Length: 59
Length: 159
Image 1 (cartoon, rainbow over the protein chains, first blue to last red):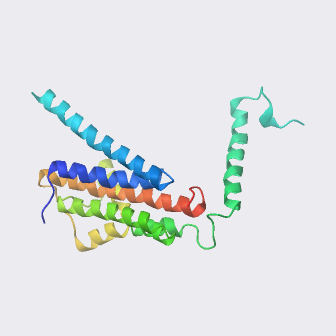
Image 2 (cartoon, rainbow over the protein chains, first blue to last red):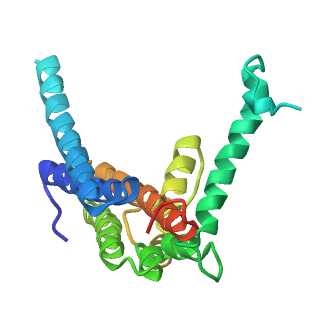
């Protein structure tokens, strides 16, 4: 069984978790979509920022 | 006699039951409006949503939400298995107990995984650890989704 790369795993994790957060934490479809997109951006953005921080610490 | 909730000198601790009562009254008023409540077992969407991801929303005729939740939870569980993640089978220490609690949130997926021996026995590759976390988080997200279905059923969240 093939498996995704690390970054693809991050994107999939962010996508699925954001979908559930958006649906469960907001009431109208428009606000669900906006909150889901916000969570997705925070998940992926924080992963990228933390990756760079760890890279710079390790140098 | 004056309403104890309206007295300005009453301490915060004495006011607390009044606020709680007012909050409960608001919730019961919303329920008595009868928009979201109907006959039947009130915990059915919660239990069904826990056992089968998305089923709680399907029972409430929330087809798109249910489908998205099912795809998300089952997708995360499947990716966890693809990454050679481990399904917890026992709880020897506190971390394993927490992992097992998360895995239990997957409902029948967890049971099927245990029955058919899905997942790795021991984590041997780097991605296996990620896979294990995917499976645990899938269970936790499924619990959130099931609770959301329960809130829709009871009227705490508007349909």
